[in-house]
Image (cartoon, rainbow, N blue to C red):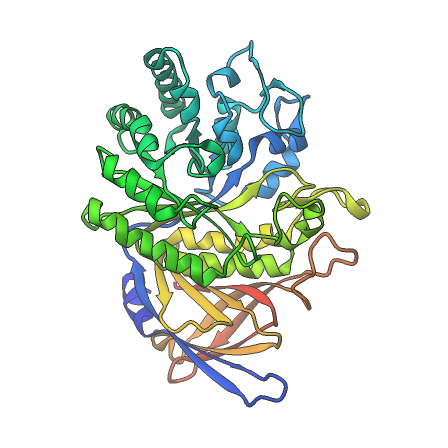
Length: 480
């Protein structure tokens, strides 16, 4: 079957959802899809907290990341891994993390000063082994505070060129959340620091995404609009990308997802004034905020809320929403780090099980299909049912459906092109009985099921499928 013909027919795809809630009548929701991204693919990836990742998974015997962890990350071609991570990026000296005589670096409060073993070369080789994409966050403060900026910049560029020649760099991001009050830097100062770096990066790295960080929500007394206006007014080159970070669904630090999506759209409108409607946005960190504040003494008691079923549902909702914004180029989940902190992708050896996937990691596995082809976004999402369709170049259609209802849900897929045809389906579903359940809990309270079945569409192009409550589902259809 011709895949271009199929793509045209997706414009009339409809999903009818039916569910029964207590003391309520049956409800029916129709969801149709339209072409959102026709020429480019969204990049899906992770923010890598390299210090915690090295601490938890470095294998001294092989001078590499442990094989079992690499296996859990393999099979997702094109995966982007952002290095060296978030806050650590503004302390990390990339030049001191290369070669045989590496200098001590004090990068996090909970670890002594020591040489970095998982340096940029080891990281790049690690990403290559996953058939992924490298993404570097540069420490602009190291450059700014250098007594000889030109020499430092030359050495940095030479290292990045060596990496790019051997492993290919997808993106270079200039600093991490420099707008936070602790950095004591204005938007104007930030722009003036990075202008000469942008100039040389654009000259030396054709085809690499050069990305400038801007502020999403206000941070204390640091107002996002003030910072961003100063950055945009003082940049000398607007033919670049812009990064944003969002943590959501966990007050007081995490506003609702709807507020984050609206904030992204407002940011795009503002940037468009300077880029002449050619804005490219990268969400280089996102995740469900567990609630509370990092300064409170019992904040770590809230960490499970960053990797439970509720977090998985939030991550899926955010990803489905923002990948339907045409300007968004990539979405990176926080975080690939250690196995005992917040936002863990793997859980430690509780109950005799070694480094199992968290439910947020399982969810990210399903969401990876968004990167495989044309995106057809839903125009009729509800607060509880959201979906997206991807028409890949491998003769498959992927439909990701989020069900936030507390009840099982029946959906009716309407694909007129398949009327009266028997079609091969596979369905992979992650679900739980409660949003507080996680893969770390005893008796494995997360259900992860896979099915394969042939189904025949009706004469008017309908087929029925069932979704469990509180679930993320990936439905795959063969198009040939």
